[in-house]
Length: 440
Image 1 (cartoon, rainbow, N blue to C red):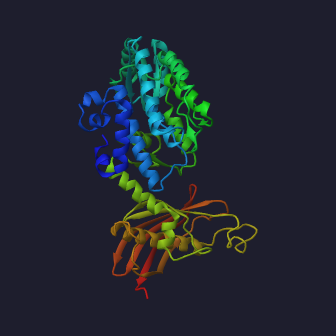
Image 2 (cartoon, helix red, strand yellow; image 1 turned 60 degrees about the vertical axis):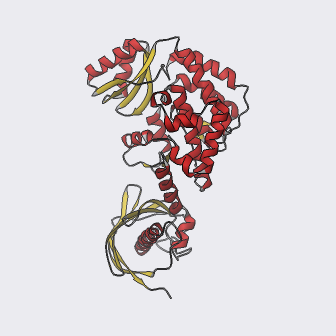
Image 3 (spheres, rainbow, N blue to C red; image 1 turned 180 degrees about the horizontal axis):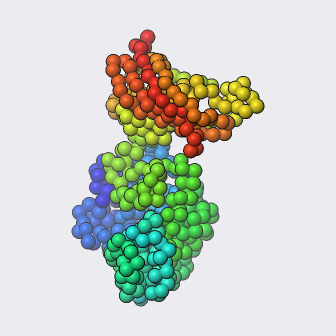
């Protein structure tokens, strides 16, 4: 875990070395060489994941990729608090270590375990847990995948009843104790009693609790939420839906692996997400957010206000397709004269926006092929042909979603399948061609 980052980035090496010194043993060697069963022990795994997540956070920040909001899944919340600026790396490492040890100590007072149940909705699982007693829902991963936690005997009984109720599968997780259950309440109180005296800061980036689904505002709130979440469920489904309320949020999983991203598709199949899990994934995310930068759009497209109709790139596959957006401000110059009583964006400008989006696809592809260096001037592109239908209109205050797919290229001619939409309404759909001429 994290070896490729350690070998490639001096900053990653330095953070691993700081972790080793602070902990008094070689966490880095455990991450790189194992043994795996020791690395996967609860506390070791939590400290390792925290360290790798902080490394990835720092590397993203150094490339100008900073979050608008952060949250974490279970113990991942400690790395989220680091990303939000609540404490430095070593202070956070001590938070992880102390929380883990307290929970292990309290967990040994009860013979507890956790299990995951597949293919059954949370409601019948909750009823089964109440019937059995001594067990409850710990994590709501997806609408059909739920983690339960409690006394081992109760967990096994709840698993059996869930299978009888129609669950597709159920199995015990390797966790040593009953995390996110009422059996951790004393541990939660002990943990808060300790960190209450520790120096932390208020989040500089919005930090959202996975339990209350509320933003954490002040330093004391950070401590209370960290402690309270230990014996409360992870409401992952509701959290993701809340963060993606407008359907436009791009999630970036910052940490080893891609477990969380796989759950996102089961919450919403249209969700936008990226995975940083290793060096390859990190480089891919950095590359994608470079074209996401509005400055990159201006480097590629020669258009300027008021005739630049692409504000941001949402998704991009080199040589294949692009998804971009244009915010239609109420004071756009064309609204004032195009049906002033009921202003709409002229269809010819919708087509122009799609043409610019298509040209951006070509420019970004050239940039990608050149190793993300600024592309050399290749040609001026002109709109050569348009075959478009306009089933609806774009109005002030809406965001125009612009999609273009490169279907064919021959010589200096490029054919695109394009569409524009606002919300759930299709504004335009059809094909267009761009023709290139040598620059002078």
